[in-house]
Image 1 (tube, rainbow, N blue to C red):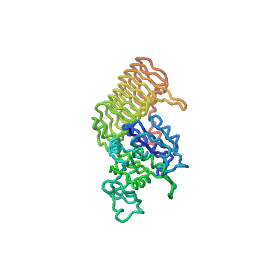
Image 2: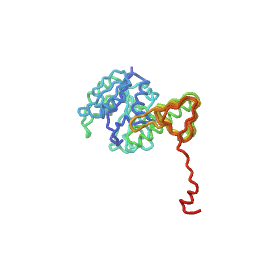
Image 3: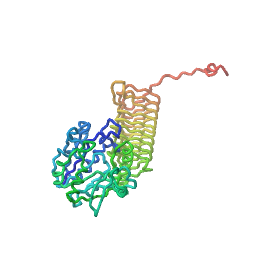
Image 4: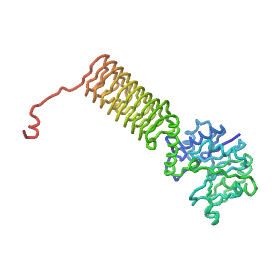
Length: 426
């Protein structure tokens, strides 16, 4: 039986943010959610250690069915202190960090497959300057030496500690109680177990890992670099599943978006927490928390949350919010908010659903086969029944019955010769 313990108690001061470090997002998803999700592919025995902004982080992960602990930072600070009051129930126990969102289940499995008392992750860096070095002899870890304490030969070692460990249960049960905080930081360090285990001639194996998978997030720069990697993973997955992407390096797709059927996404598009079904998203369109089915969106359209668009064509500079459109054409330059629009309806350029009176939002309902002329204002709440024509430039503030023509315009006034009078010339 395996157990995974995720250390997520730190303040993350280098992030320079009021948001807890582990709740910073990659592709719209908190980094700790990635780690828990990948861990759950391996085992259901997952413990998460929190401290900084405990309630906020706990609320974010409490639906994951994991055991949540609060580290006593006053009594037991440090990575080793985090394990002082956690029950060990797995035969092998993996210790992960809450700021490694790029780690995958495939990489996690490798730790459990190695026969050793301790498996320690290491990375080979072209420039390990600033990192502690891991000294390995005959395939076994002999020590971890800080750079300031390293000899000339040890400074040439390219291997550094990647910060992930797998312990046999009895190892943690023996050595965690022996940890002390007799150091400058007055903290309990997990790495001290390695030193004690070496002295006791235990079997400590090094597992070389890829920096791209085990990258820790300590700054906004790290976050941006990791997000780029994660975004590429997401896009590669969907392209392998048949989604066409034009210039994919310019497209942003978040972790919650799903595609069905053959979809096409053009350059510069942003899609968040949406479901796209057999549709084409044209260049530079933004879609958030919406469902798009058998439709064409854009270019340069914005589909906002709570929108459902089916069998429709939404053109450039059209904004849709909290609306349901079924077999609708809205070619350009319109705002459709809090509306329901039925099949066969055409929305002319410059049409606006005036859904907000400064206090409350109201709904506009438009029936089937309605022709809405350009530059029309629909002042909600209003119902336009089936087979209605609304003349261009109208302001509609009353319900329009089926089969009607609605015109709301001021009379045209022509003053002959006014141009010459105004400019004083003829």
